Image 1 (tube, each protein chain N blue to C red):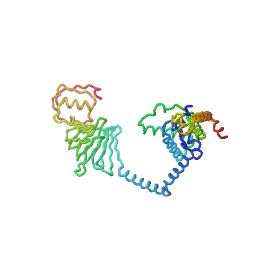
Image 2 (tube, rainbow over the protein chains, first blue to last red; image 1 turned 30 degrees about the vertical axis):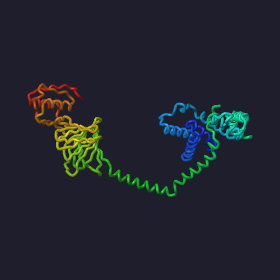
Image 3 (cartoon, chains in turn green, blue; image 1 turned 60 degrees about the vertical axis):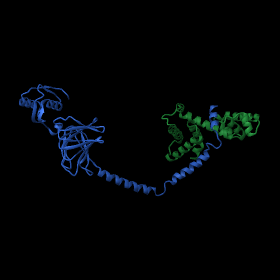
Image 4 (cartoon, chains in turn purple, orange; image 1 turned 135 degrees about the horizontal axis):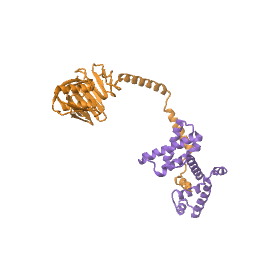
Length: 158
Length: 260
C-alpha cells in the first residue's frame, strides 16, 4: 500500500486537478480513492485508481455545478495510457520544481503562478532584478529536461 | 511547456505529498477497523435471525391466495361463502389470514357476495374501491379505469375522495379520482350468469345487447316494441332470434361479422 502511494499518489492528484481546478479537492478525492481501494482490494490497482478518481471527480463536478453532463473540454478522448503518461510526466515536473534550489523555485513560482513582474519579485525577496531573471532562466533550464523520463535518473546523481 | 505551466499554476510547497497522504490513510484505515468491534459478528447474526423470523411471520399473515381464469370463464367460492366468476384473463387475490373479505382484482369479475353486516366486503382495483354488504355485481377493470354494474343490492364505489352509492340496475365508472354514473345495459353480467332477463325492455336495447354479446349485428324495423323474456345465454343466437320473432311478431335482420 505504501508503494502504491509513493508511485501513484502525486500523478493521480494531478489527474484529478485537470477536472477540478482546486488542489485541495483533488487531494481529498485521491485520498478517498485510496481508502476505497483498500476496502475493495481490486486485482489491478493502477487502472482501478485512475477510473475511481475520474468517476469521483465527475460526481463532484455534477453535484457542485448542477450540470447533468461533463463540460465539453473535460470529456477528454485520451486513452488510459495517454492519461497515465501525462499524469506521470506532470508528477515528475512537480517533483522537479520541488527539488529546485529554494531561491530559484520561489522566483519561478512567483513569476508563473502569481504573475508577478521581475521587479515585484526582486523587491519582495530583496534581490536585484538581474538575479531574479537569472534564477528563473536557470530554473526553466533545469525543468526543460524534467519532462522526459530520464530526468529522475539524472536527478538521482545530484 | 503547457504541462509545466499547468504544474506551476498549482504548485505549492508540501502539496500532493505522498508520504503525508499515506500517514493520513493509515490513520483513517485504523479508524475504519475500529468501527467494527469484536462482537459485531454475533450481533449481526442475531439481528438477521430476528429479521428473518419477522419476515416469515408477516409473509404467513400476508400470504396471498390468487384465483385466475386463464382462457375460460371460471367460478370460485371464497372462504366466506361469496362466489366469484372470473372472465378469461382476470385475476382475483386476497389475504385469507388478514381479511378474507378484502379482495383485489384485475380484469372482469362478477361477484355474488355472501351477506354479512358486520364485515363489509371490499374490492380493490387500481385507483378505486368497491364496498358492499351482500349483493351481486360485476367489476370491470382495464387500462382506462374501472366500471361497476350492480345486479342486486347496494354498492359503494369510491375513487379518491369521490364516491357513489349504486343500487340494482345502476352502473358507474371510476377513473382519475372521479366517479360518474354511466348508462347501464339490462344484463351486463350475462357472460357470468348465463342468462338474459328482460322486463318490458325496448327491442332496440335488446338488439344492442345481444349484438355486443354474440359479436353479430342485429337490427329490427320496430325497435320501440317492449320485450319481457328470459333466455339462457348458452342457447344459440338463432334460437333466441326465433323466440323473439314469434313472441312479438317482428322480423330481425342478422349480419355476421359485426362487432367482434
